Length: 291
Image (cartoon, rainbow, N blue to C red; front, side, top):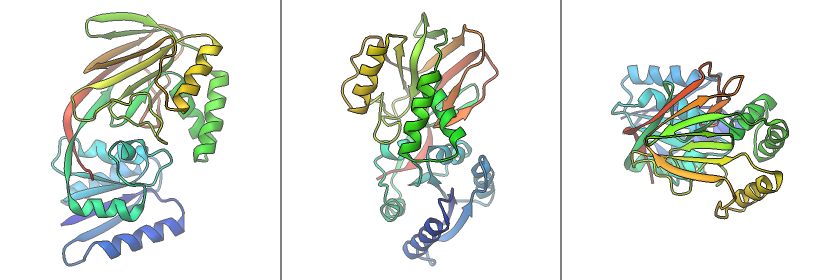
């Protein structure tokens, strides 16, 4: 069995420890293991393509949601399963599947080879597996990436920076034969019940139901925004005024305000030139190894 581990490194010590864990758990008589290390953003795509051409039986994404996205997008509609070793900050996709954050425990799950079929989201031809957004959360992601450092503290600083500078945009959304004009504070389309760090706006989302969960909170006063943020952080029911939650299979978002969309997919900023986002779900197009 040919297994390819595609790793976004987190320091030399962490990489060495991961390699040692892989070598100790995967018997060389049963498994042929290849360990490939990414060098830059987007490199995991090329490494996964290489693994597919070399007849990989299983490909393991070792990193966060961004790394998972790069690996998984190559595996959509193939028979090659995706496995996950969570090495990111928020690890939203791994948490959704209840994959342990412990490297050794995550590796042991891979050996059990239990598969689940996962839906795949598409926005303007770009795949997403966890979630995408185009309001405050995407400005926050762009700010986070500009900071060049990671972790929960970096998330907090980036969020406050985005919150202070955020300007609402007018959008037209079309779904289920409805058409609405909104000015969202937050707008998230999710395929999973986690967005990272056990934070969620879509706690009932399922990744194998052929649907995506659309959440948005309409423009509101400061008190209501603070209430919403507080309820979200404390994992309370989101009952703030202006909160909306729908489950659907496709969605169109049109930008009515001047300027450009600010879009994030799976925690990575995505530049979009179009004034229209066409979003849909592709049912059960990815095989994932789960506990």
